[in-house]
Amino acid sequence: MMRLTTIAAAAAVLTAGAASAQISTPYITVNVSNANGSGSFVVDLAGPGVIPQPDGGVVFVSSVLGPMFPMDISDSGGNVIATLNSLISPSTADDITTPDITDARSGLTFSIQAGGLDTEIEVVSSFIETPSTLGPNPVLRANSGYTASDTSDLNGDGIVDGDGVTVSSAGALTEFYVNGGVDFGILFDGLNSSFSAGPFGSEAVDATTGDVVLGANVSSFQFRSAFTLSAGDTATGNFGFFAVPAPASSGLIALGGLVAARRRR
Image 1 (tube, one colour):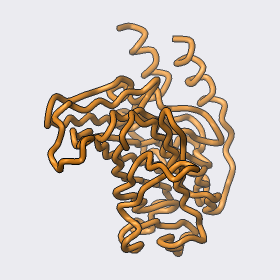
Image 2 (cartoon, one colour):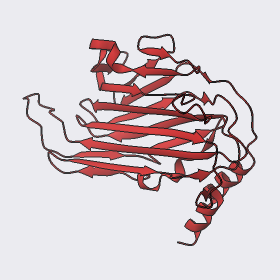
Image 3 (spheres, rainbow, N blue to C red):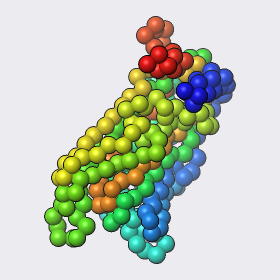
Image 4 (cartoon, one colour):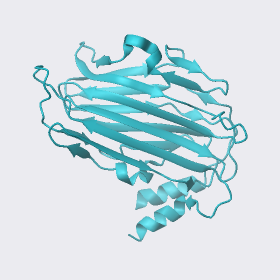
């Protein structure tokens, strides 16, 4: 409960700050490692597939990269650790589809297959500054979901081994950070534990914050996914962060109230 209290207190004292839409580079980084080595795939803002937007944000679309995907991520010795099947960021910064509302959002979907060993995977964005302040009581809406599938063919005979699939995490599978580092991953109760499926199977988990009043302006946000995937198997993930000015509504959930409710359990 100490961590929940700390997060609630930190959220209450965050200060507001106007900012134009700015995204630092690298925009998205995928880090993978196993018992034998590690490797990375980095989306640079000046790299292929990154499309600047009128509001100052960017979109990264893997489909425009043609044959790059699926793409092996190897260690320094050339050994394949994982294969990245897709990586798409549909939007960042201001959502200009609603010009009468100043908002900020970012989303990311990915699909990755572990190599011949259990693989640690991290997908992380840079901090993305919102295009303007969002008022005294902005609302955080965030969602995240994962599907794990048994796809291992470790003997290379073209037939799935049928040994099941496991995704495990030391903490929350998805973590969101705002204003330079306050962690709201704790909001994702449904994604705080491991999940698995049996032979030839798949399993999915998902969670959303609903509407949570942070009590301070959201000047920047970042998301991170970290988990271990069983050898040869595939995980797909998606997560999004959406912040808008809070409407006058008694139905919104204050973060402090959320913490208090959990203490009563």
